Length: 475
Image (cartoon, rainbow, N blue to C red):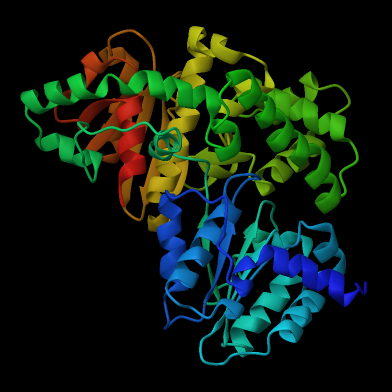
């Protein structure tokens, strides 16, 4: 659709104030850890690869792009060689990608002294964007292109056509450490570790000092579980408003707008029913036939299709069973929501979540999975869970596998000492797979120590607030 050129110019100039020497306003001074990864990409003069930043709606992708642009401008990069555009904007959505780029060319003829930097938001609204990006990387090396999307086909695009042409950066919601920065919580006496494996060398006195300095994290961690890691809602002063924003800006817009616009979904009520079910069973193992029976007028295939859509819009993560062959293909998926605060917000639990041991434990497990996902992603991990079919009820909540390295985690967030029977699944897995180290993520600070070293593998118990803080603080 042809858009009047002056209207297109006005929108682009509003999005790109640096063209006129203006500063970029309303940006936080602190940056997420992902900002360093994007900056390394932007400042790499040797690579022609593009960058795909994926993640849920309202997760902070645009802020990361604008912070990168701010750093480029501050480093004397030619301002008119930098373009930011979001195709979530109605006018740019109508104009399309090519017309938008032609308007940029008309405003500022190409300056070939430095590559042109294109930061394109919500690229999934551009038809055939994958083909366009592939051609740009192959034949227009003078352009460096970064794109974001809050819905796949980004996931599919990152496979065959993207090999060697672009790299993918999946962005989760704020980590616990980032949340503390957002809320201006300063911590000075928490010991620093690069890997929790370092705890194997600690003496009793070091554990005691860490317990004393870390206990204050628990209240902030519980607040994090209630407020979540979406930046704008997390900054709200009142918890009720924070959780309302989570429902309205995150969940409702994805279910009622993105699903309709991108995937043509019409049975939005069925989607809502399934999402509510997942909120009740966050961190649970999915039984599709049972779900279909519990949700009226939703058949099994629809459940499978809707789960795929939730994963495509980054509302859920799914894990396969640990193992090989039939035990994976025939096994049931385990599901985690994108953020630990979503179930409490959707189910209107408020502060009551902290008084519900099962729901609180599920929230901690979801939060910990997200931290493990972010911590290990650069090592191209496979995440799974494990159940011993021979011993019912024997399981391990989360396993991160990077090549031959296997790191198992069991989450036991409850106000009771860890007993041998509580970790029998973890002990059995360590023994059967000859794994040297596993972790129990706990509530009680008194359990913070190495709790077993009996020849079946060593097990470290680490309080959840400290584990999440450390996993989100490493560089």
